[in-house]
Image 1: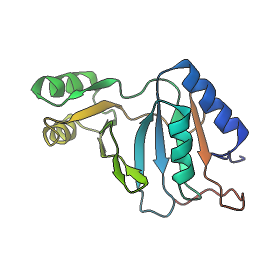
Image 2: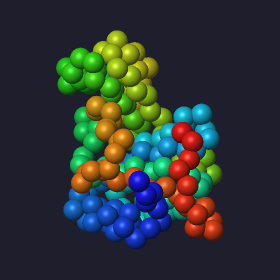
Image 3: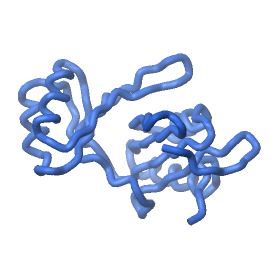
Image 4: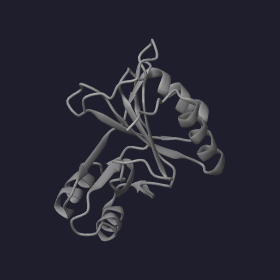
Length: 165
């Protein structure tokens, strides 16, 4: 299987088309050699997404989702927790994401949690009371489809390698 470059024409053209047709995309950033570190981020413009891609280190895998993800959004309170619990099928993996990433200089980081039980979900949300979140089933990211595309950040010399995640 050949790797797609996150700086390549095919990848970038796909992002451009997707963002012309909808108001946002969700991206999953998986950092190489970073003990499983990853981020989820929402982007509403190609410009913000391109800026973010230029900040990422080589071998980082960037997965972009065309279809809307994590659509249950709001400030966490008891009613929101109930909505989340009732919308999660038993045994499904979920993710809770702070929709506004924290900035550390030029780098951003998203606060997210994931799990597979209603008990874990309740605990995750209880710890976020009063804060805005986006919630939903963990997006399927393992393979590219017509709604999912992954690219790898190339090295400065253009070399493209899959990282260690």
